[in-house]
Length: 180
Figure 1 (cartoon, rainbow, N blue to C red):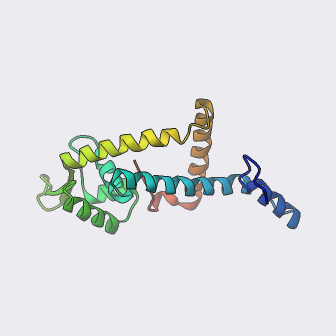
Figure 2 (spheres, rainbow, N blue to C red; figure 1 turned 90 degrees about the vertical axis):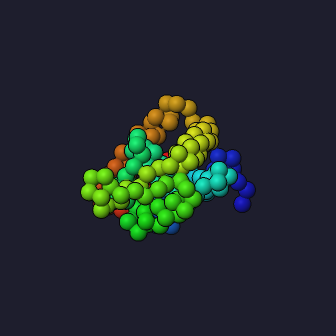
């Protein structure tokens, strides 16, 4: 079958199901199939970009969570887990890898001397700032196909959809990405 420019296949899939299952609502295909496919393409591109930049997504997530917390760039492991929406076990593994690489260090809390805090090192901060700047510049180019007004409208619609789905599925408590 010859591909028509601009044809992503979603309309053909929707038309086929409309023909094969008359009376079944198929309009969601035009949105969900495209969002799913865009998600796959963007995830693949982010992986390639982060490989090029020399960092993996879990490490970037950890460093970014600490960096966004503001000076002095220190959080407890529990705070990191809550802000990055990953499990405590995943946070522990991320901290161990980043600590071995010299990107973070663990310190005893000054408040009670028993609990630990994770501190972003100067090396970790420099790496994070370079990677986030390069990543965001690159991802900005991925939106070149739509103008500023379309971007704003799309961001608003996606925010509404994500908010609704998060509320419906109770997803605010589920692990998920919080990068950059």
